[in-house]
Amino acid sequence: MVFVVLLSFAFAKAQTYSSKIIPNNTMLLHGFIDEYPITMYLEINGYCEYEQEFSGWYKYDNSTESIPILFYYSAYPEEDSFKIYAKYDGDFETEVDEEYACQVLNYDEVFETTAVNGVFNDLKWHKSNSNTILKTWFEGNPQEQFWELGSQEVYLTRDEQIILDLGALDFSYAYAVDVIGHKIVDDVNHLLIDISVPSKPGGNGRGMCGGGEEIYILYIRLDENDKLIYSDQAKVISCFTEIDESAFIYDAAFPEKGITRSN
Image 1: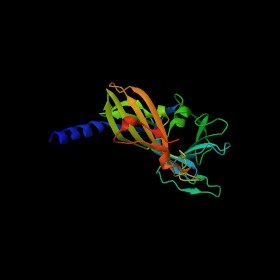
Image 2: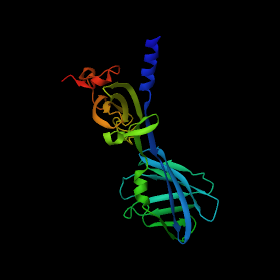
Image 3: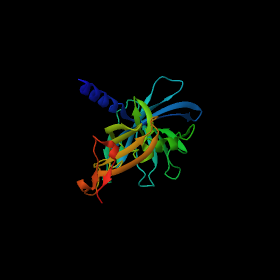
Image 4: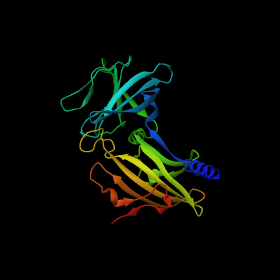
């Protein structure tokens, strides 16, 4: 009975460590079309072919009615202009052309600027059936916010409290983090963590290993206050190259042994 209780306690102790992934998929902007204050909301939906797809809405601040928006973005080709399309009923028609570029075919309004100006810089607004063009600008640095969309923060937690930034250990693209072993030895927490990251972040399933994954084992030591003392990592599975299973030795039952390399 004592053995069962101690075993249950040890298991519960190991489960206090977990992970938390916080995606950055949305942005809210405040600005003006000419002299009229507006608010714009954007979120990243994923990909259309090689381009990222974004949707959302914008509204005039003196109105409760929001207007749906849609646009696609890719850094290439560099000469492409930046356009945000708006349609009152949100029923956009789209197509993929012969160059695998995603196109919006119908819209009521558009915000656009040239590639030379960059994203969100020197935007001009006009209706699809009008030659009246109005200058549009947003507060802060919308271009910098836009570059950050799609990023994420990856943390190790204990009792749901953040204790370690795994992004600082080069795992900012991780989509699965699993603590597979934990043991306390001489007031030091020893953890083995299984981490999966995409082989090609943003690959969208295209090209070699565009939908592949890289799996790492991370070994860390934390002091009694959960401060990082030591870390080591090894890639154990890769889409790009075959890794010998015997190249790295680790044991989830004895995480304090860390990672041993056979060579």
